[in-house]
Image (cartoon, rainbow, N blue to C red; front, side, top):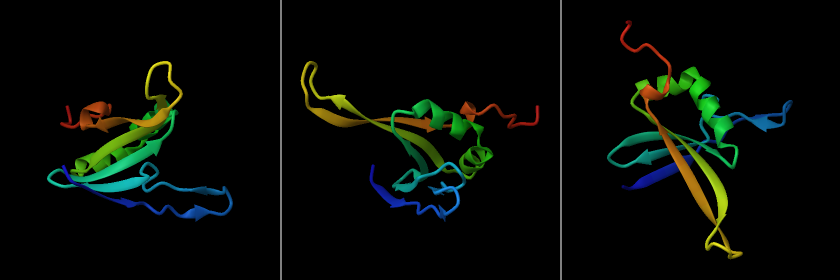
Amino acid sequence: MGISSGKVEAPWNQFSKKRSDLFGILDLVALYVGEGICGIQCCGADFAEHDRKILASPYSVEWLESYGILETWAWRKILKKKGGKLKVWDVKIKRYTLDDFNINLHGE
């Protein structure tokens, strides 16, 4: 699978001294060749907080209903060998589907 990516340059809020994510949820947009466009929320060890953020946002559902792929990437350093000192970066990736959201898709 080929991947092309582009950084989402979030606008700077001079009052809060923070950047705003695209739609309040995306840090990165990637093009997955053969799959489509993917919105990615990147984080460190605080995966659960970012997972809740994605699940609470109405934009997440709109992104998925627009045939986008939605993922959270949680980065952390782990020991390369048990008992060793060398640490390497590892990523946990969660891909969301409409089934992850508590919504009524068929008007039932």
